[in-house]
Length: 231
Image 1 (spheres, rainbow, N blue to C red):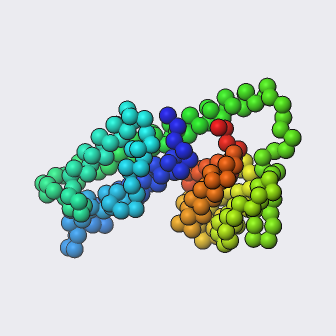
Image 2 (tube, helix red, strand yellow; image 1 turned 90 degrees about the vertical axis):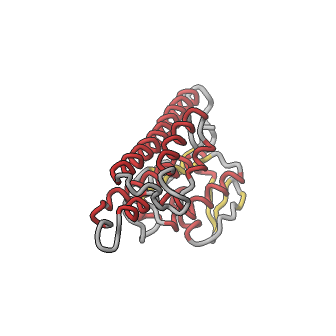
Image 3 (spheres, rainbow, N blue to C red; image 1 turned 60 degrees about the vertical axis):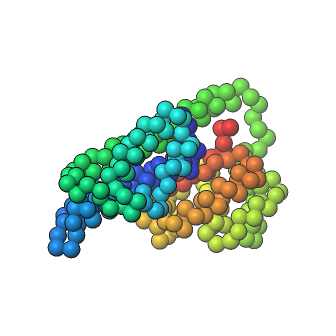
């Protein structure tokens, strides 16, 4: 099983967001103005809007999707469509356990895909040793002009601003992780800002449309890097 880099990142992001809710702890919510129901609703908040786990389910092999779907359904069946706890007698610890099970499943899917991608790259690397060396490395086919990025002479029309700056940073550091704070000085050290993620999504779309054999991968809590595609 191998997910695309953006799906791996999505699985990691959902797991990270769920973990943040658990780390907040019941002491933040249990009080004069908050209830157990508020705490439990906060635990599943990432699943109610920002993150769509259905996108992952559609990308997974049937047996993997079934396992993830079961854990997701078991958790969400505890709530109504607005995130309110259906059974007020349900212990908060039970909900936390269901969330932890879902996090574990998401982590396993992401890590398994990354391992498969690494194994595929190593296999391809061994095969490539038997082939003639390319006249020019793939990253050398990228060139820059004023507010432009070219690939083999073609203008990729990546736009300006963050997308252009991040494209240059990834290309100039081809094969090496570029930390989040190097891509956006306002980014936290261990997490990409929405500005970075938006730019990365645009770059991936541009690369795919242009048929360029490179991928942009995420390294959890570190940054992004551009690599030659193994496909």
